[in-house]
Image (cartoon, rainbow, N blue to C red; front, side, top):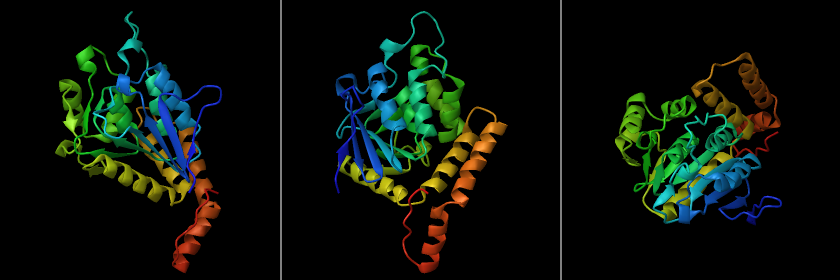
Length: 269
């Protein structure tokens, strides 16, 4: 099976590596000298790599063997004049919304520490696969930053409220195998090799299933866990996604495969 690298037109990719393998895209952050801090340059490459992806599942990871998955928001990009960078204008939140808004599930393959906004990014992904030595910490209280409501809501969708309180109030890291993160981390592995193989296995499993069905359910989960009301427009959008799945060739293929006791062949149509 041929692997193809993704490059943005007119701007060479230098801080990420993107590989498309059939219906699975793997996006690897490679800004290790800055511990994959989510600065303007890295975000400028991550965002189109997710928004422009034509895949059924996407893996977001760092290079194998790292001690830091991402150090979070690049402090050099934080305002120094007291301005509140509202969630809607923050480049990091643009990336988080792209992850949540993607039609396909995004898997965070986490090795090393996910600090601050990177913890928010990992928790915003649909599934987390992590090494047992990985750790998660949300650290705005260490910088005097009042976290925004949308990010807090995303935490509350990922962990119970008492766990979210402890993480925000103490800024202490939780290891991936902590009982407090049971259910948040979908799968724990022991090594970098296992992180690669298990995240790929999970992505391929997702990619083998009906993408229109998965898109509709992901949109519903996000709508019901957002910090915004379920408006008429959102409700109509969700209804449209369900109708698209009900009337699709994939739905008929799924029924036919079930009745014929064979594996379905879904095409997203």
